Image 1 (cartoon, helix red, strand yellow):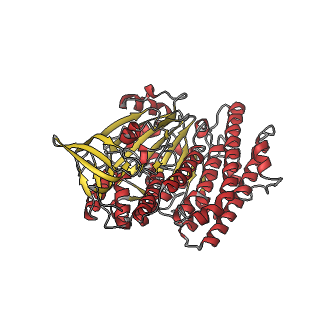
Image 2 (cartoon, one colour):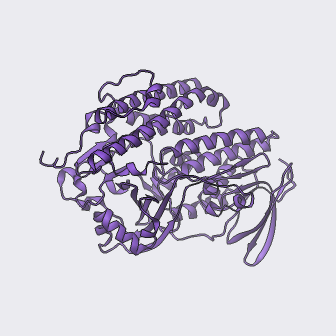
Image 3 (cartoon, helix red, strand yellow):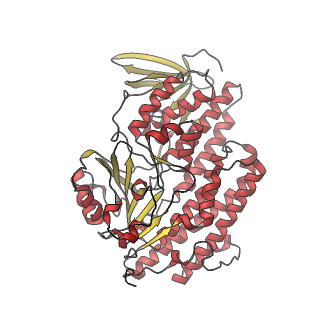
Length: 551
């Protein structure tokens, strides 16, 4: 790489995306000159710094193993007890609601991240790896080079304006999108969702929501409070995420048409909304020891981008590029994926290889991951209160994730042209199958709502994902090390199981509503017939029972 610039890589933004990219680059090539320009000065406040604290498998693996941060995560953050869902709209008796989650920890590890604590640690860590940090600095201008020319960044620190030239320029400024705005790359999408969030002191423990011994004993330690708890209703979900700084992150995420943002855009309004939709949580928050730490809200948080990678040696990462939806916590996943592609391009450029083709290919892949993941959220929020269909959707969505994108990242094959080429037909079949399944789930929920009027009756059952043997194994095998041929074969087996699961779900949907056609999905299943409850077991399809405690 020519050294006629002030630095090799200039990263605008020293938040989660920018700092992890700097660390990944520095670990891969300690001789690389990296500069990060960040408006905050560290250390920042713990507990109430930035929203987005839950990790899932790809992001957790990236932090722990690609970046080598497992010791910090194990000692300074909280081990996560998976996702947990309560279908509890308007209910105070949470122990009488359908609960979806695991009774024991699954093998693949994830954490709840205190963003302030984590970014303070990352700041010191990247500096120790030789990265230059310009803190307390505001970007004032950018000249984007083309045709081999260097980029230039002007920034102000303590009233002094400086200029830095760089061979590579990366926008990691989050929603500010400094480079994104300059190049006119912003792109909206049709996912109309909003959010309001806040943090309080102390932890909210679901064990206090019931004194029923059977309900309390459903989970072994670490117990429910370490989960990312989702309190679900039609058109919305409410999160509870514990932080290692003895605080709790809380937030409403909702379909803008069903739950307008102006009903929750202050803390007082949000609590009024919560008392109506999740009164048991509201009662916990009214107890002593839960002082308000902050409050924020965001309209239309989901967005895309026209371009994220360029052969002219610039890129967007994190929320400066795309952002989907927080329901399955994919934010750190997409940071991991985009940062990995950026590292590959910079490494190739450093070796004297052209990057135009790489930029085009990686962008195509990245956008396909974005679009396919968006199908899990777009148009699906009305389902969220359906205690019959939503647990099946969660199982399907996670099977899709653990069968394709997650193993691709864990295996290190995200940039392998050999493996990607071989997997292309399998990914195509799985993506088509997922589109058909999302349509089926949506119609199933609509028919339930029209038939029952109440899609979340009291039910008192734990749908325990831990006890689904193949599902548990799907999670465990993420950490296996396989040769390329064996890895491709395993993905083939997992995609075949997706077909079996789809056939089973279609059969049960038609048992419930014989009028469901789902012709597109049926065509993809090529005449397969499902054995009744073969993969999930009958409990997952049981009709909701109003008085199951005495039934």
